[in-house]
Image 1: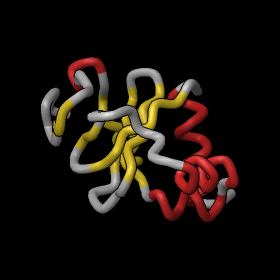
Image 2 (image 1 turned 120 degrees about the horizontal axis):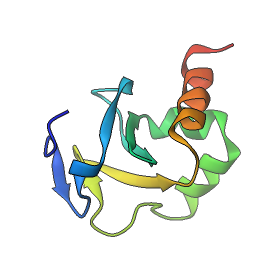
Image 3 (image 1 turned 60 degrees about the horizontal axis):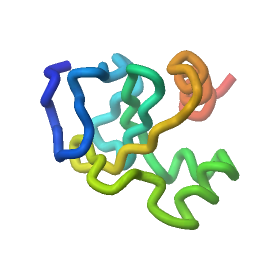
Length: 94
């Protein structure tokens, strides 16, 4: 990943890397976990996860100004490996 690819402001991308597999060109939200960014679909997350559904329904979960590649950034406190596992389960099934 280029350190400034898709940078819209508010997030220092030099500290992050795009996930190889879970950076979807038509994604609508960027999840940041540790040093890894995942660009995925809000609708897919909300469809399969009450937590994400509630997060997206209540308000914008992103911090003001944190956007990457035109998408809001949601910072997660989980490890990037846990987020990767969750996303693989949601997108690819068991």
